[in-house]
Each structure stands twice: as structure tokens, then as C-alpha cells.
Amino acid sequence: MPSPPVTELSERARDIFRRVVDGYLQTGAPVGSRTLAQAGLSLSPASIRAVMQELEERGLLAAPHTSAGRMPTERGLRLFVDGMMQALEPSAEERAAIEARAGAGGPVEEALAATTAALSGLSACAGLVMVPKREARLKSIGFVALGPGQGMAVLVHADGSVENRVVSLPVGLGAAALVEAGNYMTATLGGLTLSEARARIEREMTAGRAALDSAARALVEQGLAVWSEDGDRRPVLIVRGQGRLIDAAAAADLERVRDLLDDLEGKQEIASLLDSASAGDATRIFIGAENKLFALSGSSVIARPFRDGGGRVVGVVGVIGPTRLNYARVVPMVDFTAATLARLMG
Image (cartoon, rainbow, N blue to C red; front, side):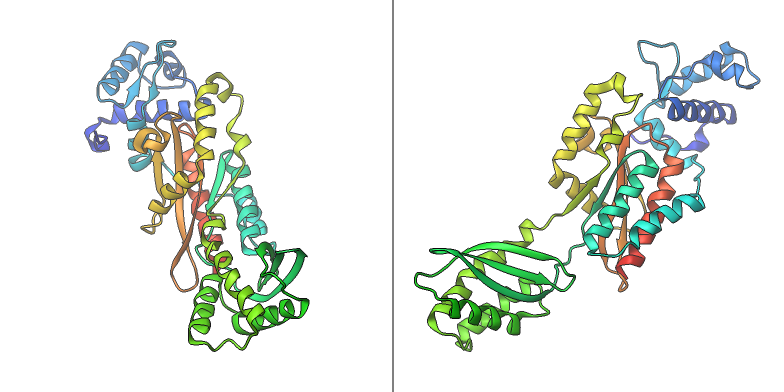
């Protein structure tokens, strides 16, 4: 059931509702009528309770059994986030911390991981980033014999990263054939991604254009299966700061935290959730059971896509935390991080 429009609430109800939400997000505890009365609200506790009861009947507040106070429901949080929240822009220090991590240099995935770690630390949530859907480009390929029938392919990428992959060697393959196969593949595949390299090799072999002896040709063909596995083996999601989800307030709700950490282990499902956030330009906020993945843990995800210099969506960055996280502060922080990563990817 959707939240009612803010305009349906009286000014008094909006004020009390906002104060309850603000108090809950700050402390994680229900807010009582006496607390609101003592905070300068010019109403008696009885009048405040009457308004809170009305908000509860609308499904915006709930009264836990252990307390006479009220706390916002997930429906109430959605109303607050969509219609009442006043965003707090990141401070100069926070912006500098994020930009410093993004500009540290090195392979793109390391920069993404470092930036996500900074976002996690500043937001007190777990940071998430979906790795851009682009493959590294090859610089050179070499082969090393490990023993009878077994060798290792050494792939050096243009960004400086190196991958070692075990391959089967044809029987009787000599050292000269290893060198020949490596030289051929480097000359033919340099500058290509692995998926492009696989397609190129298949065309060369089919057309009979590969100037290789039979042993080296067999080695190149043997490697095709290795190249084709790359798309599945490359990470799709980086998660940093899971430990920040276990704070003093969470200690009283360890079962929820345990469920949340279990959710984070299902990286493919979270990657699918983030992928759904890449459809538009705006920041997406998933609150609790609005997404079935977090129905048990009662968690919220704030995510925003980022684009490369050509305007193509290449990834999504965000945070995950309890539903009582500081939306007004964290949403603009995620927005700024996405803009920073877009410049990095440009």
C-alpha cells in the first residue's frame, strides 16, 4: 500500500511525524509523547498522543510492545524520504576524502574498492559498488611449462594487472612451441579484450590463417576454453565495511544483523538489485521489505548509477544499512560518490 501524500496530513500531524522520524533516526529508539512535549512542542502529551494515534492508524507509525513511544514504519520512512527530507550536502572534508580515494591511481577496480571503503566509513554503512561491465585489454600473453601435460598462461593486461591461468599442454610440446604460441597470440590479440580475443582466434583458426606448427596450434586451441570463462570469473560486486553494520544499537538486534550479513553473502542477488538501479539517472532508495531480498533483515539500500565519458552506464555505487540510517546525509553522499566515479571513468 503506497504512502499517503504529505498534503493529506495536517500541519500539526506533519510536525509531529517529522519529529518522531528525526528522533528515531538519531537514536534508533521509539519516541514518546512526553519527549516531544519536553522538546518544545506547544501541545500537551495527551494531544500529542492523539495525533500519534492518528498517524499509527494511517500506517505511518508503529508502537512496539516494549515501549509507549512510536517509531516510523517502512511506509512512514518512504513518506519521509520522498516528501519531507531535507538533504544535507557532504562537507568539504567528506568530499575531499572520497575524491582522494578515487584519484589514488592504479587499476580501476582498486580505485573503486578504495572509494567504496571511503563511502562506507563516512556513511557508517556497508559500501557497495558494481564493477563496470568492461573487460581489461590484453598487452601480452606467454606460456610456461609446469610439468608433463600442464602449463601456465601468463596474461598481462594494459592496466598493468597480471593473471596466471593453468592450461593443459599437448603431449610432447617443446619449449619452442610455447614461445611460438605466446608470440603469435601477443601479436594477434594485443589490445583486445578476452572476449574479443577469443572471437579473433576462432576466426583465424577456422580460416586457416594462423601460421603455427601443429603443436603451437594445439596449445592456442586448448586455451580457448580458458578465455571463454573470463566473464564469469571477473568480480561483479565489491562490498566494503560489513563490520560497520554491527554497532552498539545493532547489538540489541543481532538476529537482524545476522540476516543482513547473510544477504551480503548472496552477492549475485545484490548485484541484480543494483543492476535494477542502473535503469535511470536518479538515486534509488529501497527500504526494508520493498525489496524481498531484505524482507527479513529490515535493511535499506541507497544506490545511484554512474556513467563513463560517453554517457554509458558502467556501474552502480551505493550503501546498505539499517532502515534507520541517516537518509538526509547519506543520499547526497552517494550522489557525490557516483559523480566522482563518473569523472574517474571518463
